[in-house]
Length: 162
DNA sequence: GATCTGACCTGCG
DNA sequence: CCGCAGGCCAGAT
Image (cartoon, rainbow, N blue to C red; front, side, top):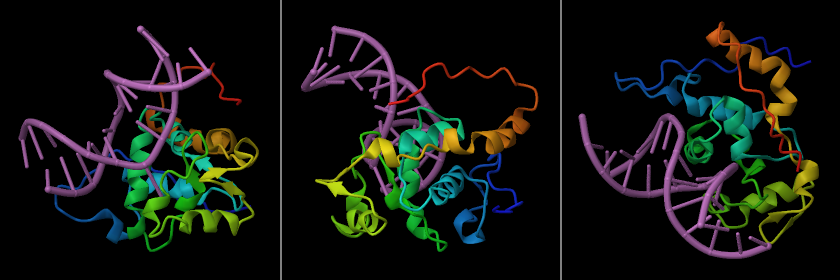
């Protein structure tokens, strides 16, 4: 039951250390990037998610670009981040060039049983794994705990139910 | 310390 | 229906 009772996703309040101490060397930090890595690691085997889904999950819907940018620095993570399971909303392997090869990302996906045709994931809507839908019950509590009072969250009327 | 860029997404024309 | 421009936030120069 994945009894990872640890902090998981922190509030990330104190981002950026002016003292020049690199967060990634510390192993775990509260930086926004680390949160992205955590979510990316939660993507099940044989499933994929999108940058926007992770961004929305973290509370910053419009900052999908940051998720991709975070993946760019994911190579510093010794723990290993399954960045190949993160694609854009269309299911296109936009970050394939950052895997050290134009076909590395595709091969990684295919090794998990994911079919890729011309940099496009086949049956993307079927294997798509949305952290907001899957992890919402447990993780959102962490975020709400941050505000603790601002329970007045905007209802997500617009569901991207493909 | 200001400016630009970026593995994106959504909306408008 | 397709094309484009704006927005988003944090790292890099």
